[in-house]
Length: 130
Image (cartoon, rainbow, N blue to C red):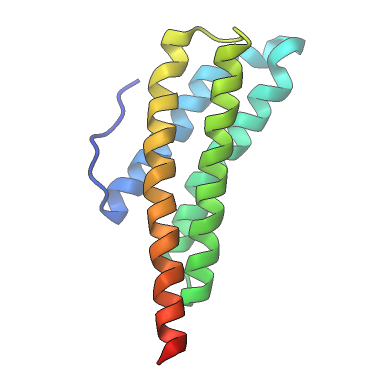
């Protein structure tokens, strides 16, 4: 799986989140057949696709409050994805070599989304102070 470079324009971030979600689908496809890993695979799929979907919703938000909420959800879902990926790796339910690139990307996406959410909250507070 090829992950995009580390630029953070809105379109690039949207592409990175989509590629991340697609990578998770690819990683988890074989896990769906195994009872031991099925639930975790489904949870990971939901969180990765939700991070992608909520960021897309934030990009077309109708208000600053809506943007702030959606970007916060995208951050939470990226963070949840990171936790599930770590769990898969630590439980030896997936090969570390398959998980590591996605885990690294989840950490970067989480950091970017966290910074965006924090900036949005600060901007909202600044608007209220005027």
